[in-house]
Length: 400
Ligand SMILES: Cc1ncc(COP(=O)(O)O)c(C=O)c1O
Image (cartoon, rainbow, N blue to C red; front, top):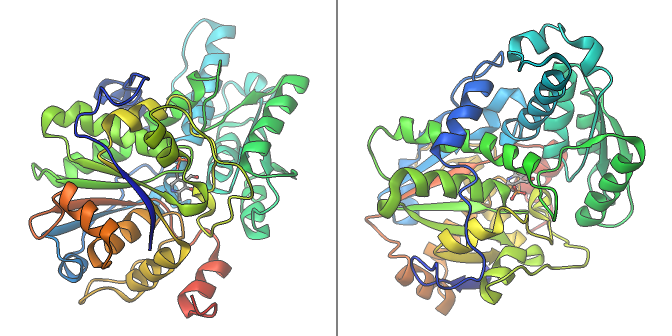
């Protein structure tokens, strides 16, 4: 169900009092792609053409970028956290030796004496921490990852499997972010956070440049076909802002409509869009969309999202479950897709807007000219990152 929505006027530079910065434009992403494509195991993730889903929904095309394939980590996140760990280490090595080392030298352990002195830490609701831990293990430094109260045991174990020290903290994600910052300061560690706050922008900027690789690959795979709409799920907004910046830079005036989607319990970007400035949401942020359960937007992501998005939609957990089950079955002969609760949110929003008989859905369809001619791009940002929860939802055991 559409729990809340906000449609912004097209172009909208006039709407907000904060200006966009273009953190993941084509040039910045060329740099991250250059480094990431040198990692062992790098390859494009699949771009699926879900013709059965398109027919079911009532649009011309549904393109689905399958990020569950990314580096065997079951989510897109390695492009951000692990990439930022890589940049942190490159910078540390350069400051000691005077030259930026190639990634291959770090991976081979040539700078072990420097890297093993470095500790990276972060707060996570699962996927980001897994990516930082994976990067740290591969590149030879230590990682300490903070998980908050409601992060599942399975997600904690998956992070520890990459050699990280996993520590559970009190409160929600945003509290864990603050705690990680304090611990880093006390211990001389480096915070590798996917969200930016005052005075902390460089590392989250790298993370967004890493995410931009998804957009660069997608444009190549689309081979000249221009999507008309892109639905992007947002937690702190870094992922969505990265894709949006790249598409806006690449397509210019021809850029597709961007629709930002969030859980109804944690719709801080929607709230900010409506206000025209930074707003946060507090409380338990209780949703099955664990990766999107963030109440405080990333400072460098928000300006992009406010300036470049056409609509902001908050959806319920029920819509997400329905979309997961639909993709698991496969629509009209499409191959089944395993997608997690946060990863499916964009698809779930498209499905809901097109199917729901409500004033909100009707207004969104009209404002976005979403219909039979639309070519929609979705990014399935994760697979079954919590397999027990996934099975539970798919089996319908919760009757949701
Ligand atoms: C699967 C998945 N999709 C999307 C996001 C949203 O990313 P961001 O927090 O940068 O908005 C996350 C964040 O953890 C995630 O885990």
